[in-house]
Length: 249
Image (cartoon, rainbow, N blue to C red; front, side, top):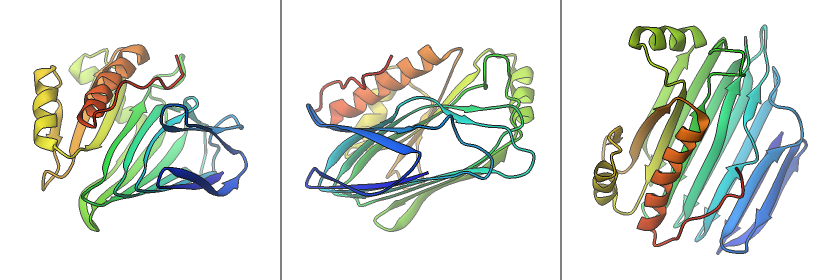
């Protein structure tokens, strides 16, 4: 599965589409792309690729539904996302990741942005299917963020479901849903201050304060998505944009 698209001066152009990738493009209020897969999820050995280039544009992206990763005895499933932003704004709101029992996933996320660009990117990790409890084998994350060609933040880890279960047991917590937010605004200092005033404490700068990284947890998906939406609305307010309805429950 692969899809590549670009926006120049807010004009959309699809440059590559390989089944089972699909998309919907809406432009009634703002440019909005909803990404989806006509298959049932990511299977062992699958390689999903998403490539997005924005130039002098502002676009909202979301996924149609949760990303499901199926069990594997050997091969990893691979999901690669590459974003290139030139004087642009990108808001990428992912639905949850559901790692089935014995699944293996590698995610590569790479964002290149110039100093004028802004972005809001989210990932959500669930505990798995309703009858599973972090039973996946391995999740490897390789996320890189470049500002004006210089590496600003590199996230590199390999975690197992057993490690997360152990963490939850040690801390005696029922917070089974986790979210990570990667944010770049034009006014990071003011944005971080606003988050603190709104009660969001688990956010901090990257090494040169050109980005903000945040983490969240909750007992269920409704609460975590509501938290993300609140932070997203604060972000959009910094851009003088009103609330946006993704058209999903």
